[in-house]
Structures are given as C-alpha cells and as structure tokens.
Image 1 (spheres, rainbow, N blue to C red):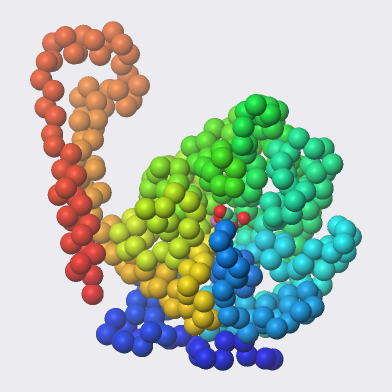
Image 2: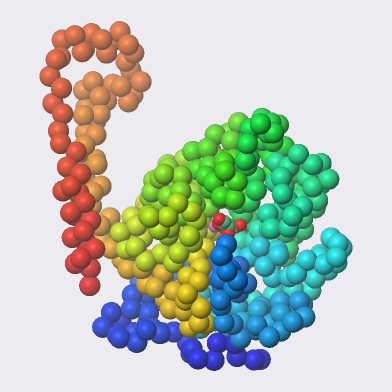
Length: 440
Ligand code: XUL
Ligand code: CO
C-alpha cells in the first residue's frame, strides 16, 4: 500500500528528556496509572474531518494544506486515498479510535441513491482496514449542515421535505455506524438553531427535533444498534443561537421530551468556553447528572469569540478534565476525540503529527497529575470538610429530610452564630499548580 506520510515514521514514547519532536514525552500507552493502561484511560480518537479532509480554507482565503493525496481528482479515488492515509496516520500515532461524519468518508452523488452507494463502498473498505489495523470506531455521525438543502436546519427545518431527507440520512448514518461497530453515535445540531425570532417558531422546531431523535431511538432498537447516543452541546455557530446550547440546556430538553434514558452528552472544550463555561464545568455537570458520554478534546482562543478548534495544549484545563474523568470512573465507552485542526499556517503534513503529539502528551500528563491529586486528596478533603456542617446536628437533619421550615426557623431563632469559613480559592489553586509543577 502507498505510504502517504513518508517523512514521518512510527511515533514512540521517549520520555520527557527527549528532544525528538516526533516522539511522545508523556504519553506512554502501556504505562499503568491506577491499575489501568494510559491508553485505556484516554481512549484517544482521530477526527476524520479535521485530519483528512480539512484544507485550511477560511473566510479570507483558499486552502493552504499540503497533502500527498492532493493530486487525486476522481472523488471516489480521493476518498479511498484519504481512507488509506487515515489508517497509516492512526497506526503511526498508535491511536486506536476514529470518528467521522458520513460525508467525510464518501462524496455525495447526484442523488441520495448514489450518495448511499458511495458511502456503502467506502464503508466496506473502512471495515477491511479496521480489521487489518485493529482500529475501532468511537462514533459516527451525519453531516446535516454542509449542503445548501440544510440552510434552515435539518431536524428543526421549516421544510418538511428537508426534514424527511434528514431522517433518511440519519437512518443511513446509524446503520453505517452499526455496521462498523461504532461504540457511540453523535448528534451535533449543525444548523439546529435560529438566526431571528421574527421568522422562527422555537416551540415547533424543538418538538420536531425531539420527534426525529425519538425516531432515531426507535430505529436503533429495531436494528440492534447497541452504541450510546450522544448529543454534543454548542451555544452558537453556525446559527446565532443553537438549541443544544450547553449541558444544562440539553438536560432540560431531554427531560422535557422523555429522552433522558437514551442520550448522554459529548462535551467539546471549545463549545464549553463559547457558552461561557469552563470545560471542567460542563464535564462536572454531566458527571453529576449521569450523562457524561464522551469528550471532544480541543481548545479555543480566549481572545477570539469563535470555535477555533485548536489542539489542546493547556495543561491546567487538561488536568482538571482528567480529574473529572477519573472521578467519573473513566470515560468508556466514550473517549477523547481530537476535534481539533492545525492552524492554516501549519500547512505541512508533519504538522498533523506534531499537533496530535502535543494534544496526546498534554492529556497524558494531565492524567498523571489528576491521578496523584485524587490519590493524595487535598482537594477532595477540602471539599468534604467544607460541607461537614451537614454531617451532624441540624445539617444532618436537613439532609435526612427530618426538618421543614418551622423546625429550621426555631433553630435559627435560637442560633445566631454563623461560623462561616474561608473558601481558600487561591490556596487551592496553588495546590493544583504544585501538582502540575512537581509531576515528573
Ligand atoms: C462542530 C463540531 C462537530 C461535531 C461533529 O463544532 O464540533 O465537528 O463534533 O459533528
Ligand atoms: Co465536536
């Protein structure tokens, strides 16, 4: 088989003293952390779209990426070249999982019949390569946002014909994900949102959205798809207001439409920050509501207000994300999908490897630090102590449901001492720093 990244050979772990850019400094796949291999904690995944199909286009200029499959003109031949390159890439980086949209792996044809035929052909090639290279599908999804037909949305469109088309495309994408043994299926609401309320019936659109999700649940049952359904929140972009704004909004939606038993969330760092939250906040909220499904690992730029999808290199955020994952008992059957793209100026094929290495090393290091933090327990102990007034006396009575307003009023009238203690935020932040700085 042709080699697509001939300038880069297999990336190995060389440790933090290595100066070789094409080596892992912290990601040591078989290293045991808390009884589990690093690779099983992290379950890294390659995003097909950013890695194989993105070409660096932005609003002001055409693509810049140099890729060895650039000269392939026939659409299906190009799709095959990219597919082979994808498996070479995963193999060289020792990444076990990947994620794709239906339209990433196969081109659209003149109609849905031809489009599905193209997809089937690529899926059978993909299946072979997965078997040969021992790679797994973390999740599949449908691209219901790129084609102009989705101008008003897909599951929330005002056009019933487009709604029907979207359902057909979703059905096929779930079948294909099932065929490839996908462990999850993601619904990111591409254009499910609105630009202006002057032309939008929010209530009707959300009812319709729930209807299409219910159809997906019913169909998955029918074909025996065992993967986890995930909704990926995002507050804005492409629409001004996306319906799946953040984890809290998605939770409210799922509960309203009685879908909460079938969906969890796929949380993306850059979407969290666009919603005015931290990545940790979103993961923590999902964990506390038993809906933490999977993560799209990336980061935004604090100086830009859009979804920059940068590779995650911020050790502080990665540590706190891993802290939440460890507290969750792991992320499986989800994983850490690098929904991240190289900058437009990082156009050489080598940059793809250097970016994944940076992201993987950051999360590996974050895992190690988070594990030690949890083991030693300075944060956990502090939090436990902070709420200790609820372990005895009146606090315990409150938690046990033994008291109501009258009893609490009686207690408050005779106990005027509040005894508040410092929250010690700066001290706690310095502890996190200490663990980050000292981890060897
Ligand atoms: C878009 C985004 C998507 C989803 C999958 O912001 O994150 O790539 O992850 O559709
Ligand atoms: Co994403």
